Length: 497
Image (cartoon, rainbow, N blue to C red):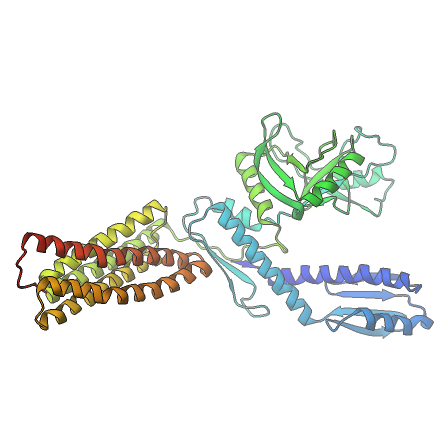
């Protein structure tokens, strides 16, 4: 399980407060109102200080014009204004972040190929066990890899480099400490620049120390601009991640590369530099590759994360449970035993109640199950416990169709009709009823498949295949068996039913 609520709330509050901070700074300047500072306190509060006393009314008017009901305004002292995010807005941002996390995690798990995953939110925002996403991932052989895929935010950015004074293009040597980088700028980085680390990979051919890069705060291109991301190779055959940008981003990328030929542009993933190549020529079509001395799995996983989008908040594992194979086998064994017991019980009932015709129903039922298992094997579907439940329900539905047919044949025989006439009438009159009941159940199963997840979809798949097989065996196979019997005995006067 992943607890997101308070982290999502913090991040949502920080983003909201930061946006308000920027807007307020610009608004105050546009109105010609002087102030000493505008800064953020905590995660959800913006403080404006040093407001001239004669401008207080103008600031109040500005606040009423630009701030909605989701922000609370207070004046604790003259010349000081505090704007705080309301709990309502904080919860809305938190809920939006959790929903987006759930969607992104589902996309990543689906692309990873886990069979019938179950992904659902537990609790609600603001409750005790709230903002947790519960994942059930059957058949995962490498849990650590899956956890890395789930937990990584995958916030990808392309950033231009700010060269230190006196350092020419092609002469920059990344220092191994942040302090060393700041010293290259005379003790203070420019306002539009931040220091980003490039951690060591521990592999041959790469630096074994953390290196620091001075990069622009504003990203030239972001992960949201990606249209395609897939594992590939660079021109030397080394593993890389091929990417293709959206048309708008491709135009921006072409302009940026044209203006920065010979300069470094770093690729940053979750605040860490993964590669910092030199732009050797203009890139006009918005395609390229990300190098990073990747292994095969790393290239595949990075491409998967980029395709699924970035997480709006970090997720942390707060609880992890593993069901061992022996327990899983016991559960499946119990489910199969229940299915076999149910199948045998139905067979015995049909043989005792419908006598010779019960053999017909039993053969049709066996063919039904065989068709179901064959179709699931062809579709590479996994027979899970919910799938076994769908199989058992299919057995019941199939027998129900035979019961309808047999009871109708009994009625026709009691009216004095011949065996062939009773069989023809029984199948003909009941056909519409059988199709009607199966269509309504198919509709329910279809919606379960469309809107369900994980085990629910597995149950729906088994049920849909079983219902289609049931119509075939009840209407076609059972009728064929009767016709086969009657073809060898044209003057049958009694039917064991």
